Amino acid sequence: MTERKRKAIGVFDSGVGGLTVAGELMNRLAGEDIVYLADSARVPYGTKSPDTVLRFTRESLDFLKGRNVKLIVIACNTASSVALPKLVCEEEIPLVGVLLPGARAAAKASRNGKIAVIGTPATIRSRAYETALHEIDQYLDVRSHPCPLFVSLAEEGWLDDDVTRMVAHRYLDPLAAFGADTMVLGCTHYPLLKGVISETMGSGVTLVDSAKEAAAEVEGVLEREGLARSRSEGGKFECFVTDNPYLFREVGERFLGRPINKVEHVSF
Ligand code: DGL
Image (cartoon, rainbow, N blue to C red):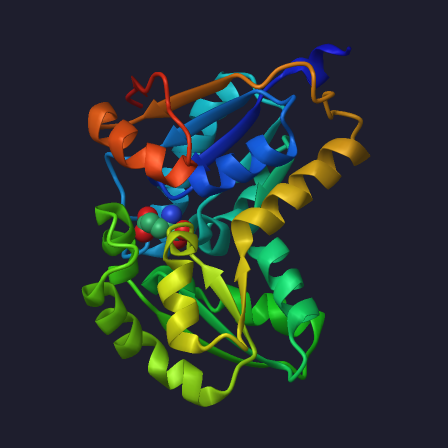
């Protein structure tokens, strides 16, 4: 096996949400080692300006490159929307975001051409999903809405709760009235709230989870570049955070859906 193939996949998010992507990678690419970084000292990114998100993402990528990874997944919709377009021009290492895989899957799933997108305020403000969807098909009718409270509700673990249902109606009723048959869950936290979101939007609406789609994209890139390891080889998971490792571990296990042995604190 080549030296490069043996390296881990770097996964970056502002916090715990990217663990939904790490979990999908573990399911799909069981032979790969994963190094996860959460910039938990500076989360949330979703309410910050594009310049700040770009600076924080750049610094986080530098940390992961220092761990000698072979590919980096930007498992944060905000960073994928705001920072990734600039970073792909700067970096030599392959970068995979969560936005394009999600947009492609939504365009494919929609039958009536009406797509709803939800995400953090920064993601929605960037219009990155609209742009990506219209590059795929200019006739798609896209409606977007920021749902910032969903992040806290998912972290609190209120996944099947009346408060979450009320918030969901407030955010999503206008999108349900729009008549979309497909909705992009454009934030790493939202897959945890799938049950309530689906109940609010109606069973006829397909929810696109960008975590699943991004894992499929990573598999494709590794195969194309000859960097994929076989299922029987690795599977080590290392986790780094910029603040509060104990809280991260507690909440993170819910997002990952399996135990996290160790969370290390780093600063940069
Ligand atoms: N990870 C972010 C995203 O997917 C949500 C949390 C944050 O705002 O930093 O957009």
